Amino acid sequence: MKNLTVSVDDILQAPTKAVYNAAPVHRKFPVILYAPSLSKPANQNHMACEYLASHGYIVISAASAGQQGQTMTKDTAGIMAQVRDLEYMMAQASRIPTVDTARMGMFGFSWGSMATVIYQMRNQNVKALACWDGSMEYQDYDLIKTASDFNPAKLTVPYLYLCNQNEDWSTFPFFRSLAKSTKHLYRLKKLEHAEFTAYWSFYASIKPTTSYQTDSYRAICHYTLSFFDAYLKDRKKAKMVLQHSSEENGFSSETIAKLSI
Image (cartoon, rainbow, N blue to C red; front, side, top):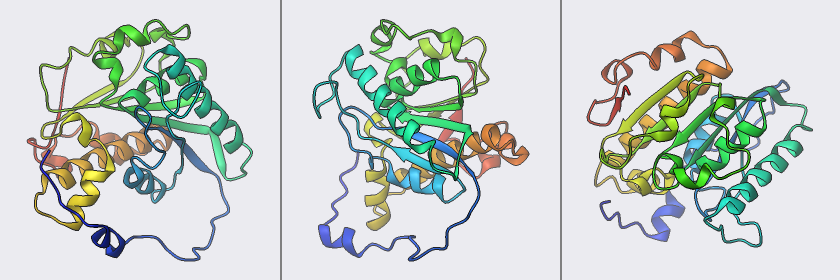
């Protein structure tokens, strides 16, 4: 990652897209749960969550914490602690009249992706699942397999996986194990693992010394939105995004590329 020097004053003076006293809309919206990575806060990918919310989704996130305290433990107890936190959040959200529980999606980053996978296997109301560089495709595949609820045969919903630039990091064992799911696999060809977070793109937008962070994060958000629009809203234009080339979608193939395995 390139060093982006941004001061506190730079951050406080950065413009936002928030609208003061926005009028509420009285109808139901599909809901998306976000699971952050190991011991990270709920706002880890605030830009993606706000982006999805601005396109007609209710987006909910909970901090990543372990079974016994704030620090996440790297074991199945830790995975299940995050799963149960997400289940609690969704149980509370289902009481909100504007939440359409029949159209529910999930996405997670890194360690958090494993919680979304297990959540979906425990809760069949999840209709679409997106994972950003999830750990189950790397060193933690052997760990997630030990979870009592792990069963790839139960994951039959559409699945989107976005991976980092390192071509020799994974053979995608979990992705390959899904036999009943409509699958989409993309590589972000300029991003390291840690750059799948809003911080770097946010800093780059304040001090635009480089463009690859903002271009790549914009691609991640665009493809994630298109994925949920395709499978939670049944929008034909969004489905075409998942079929088109990077260039047809307005991105360089050096930023994002579709993989076939």
